Image 1 (tube, rainbow, N blue to C red):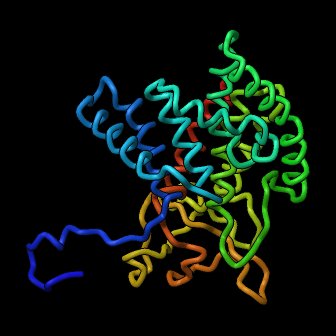
Image 2 (cartoon, rainbow, N blue to C red):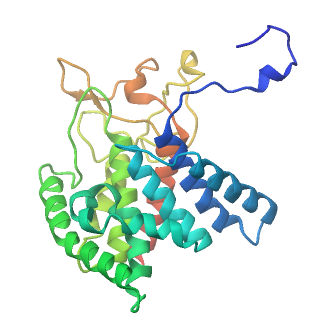
Length: 283
């Protein structure tokens, strides 16, 4: 991978796997960034969109879990460009949307909102009808899973801390609760944030967000783990089940499954949840 000569071009290379799911998710994020940056930094915005479309076009035929990443990229690229092919690909889900609503319902909510306004487009109307028909059943499933514990969130403790999964759930639920308040309660968004801030299992009830709250995770796993230190604002995955013991959150910097820091999904979902809770609290 390198010729061991400092300063050569290979010092700037990044080696990674061939992962269509991650690449398409990145394309979706870049398309969303385009809409945010447009009018503020048009050069960067246009670059984001160009890369997003190039990455999307590299994955003509994907299967399995990567299919959902492609539908997400379709959604963000359609919202960014209004190009019909992206929408047409989403509309192929019409007959199976009820089966997959739990995976893609959150990012297709804005697409359904568009489709319901297209009164003369039969395909759009059919998608909107099928999508809305699937929502009550999914809402019922969520009520069951969130009532299985006192925390109000889907929680299945295992050796890996569940904080990031719960943050992602709250992040995704916001799009449904804000778009369909008559079907989905907004409480799971608050409950997900409460879980991160200390309302979680174990004797250690610290906030998973370092430096946030009266008590927080102040020993993190990262490049500085040997220092027993932390990064303010870093969000750890949280309380895991260290068998054969009960759920706990040890003050120990080498338990990556409990106190590892990440930006995507960890800190980013936490910041989104805080803003989402604030917005929903205004209603």
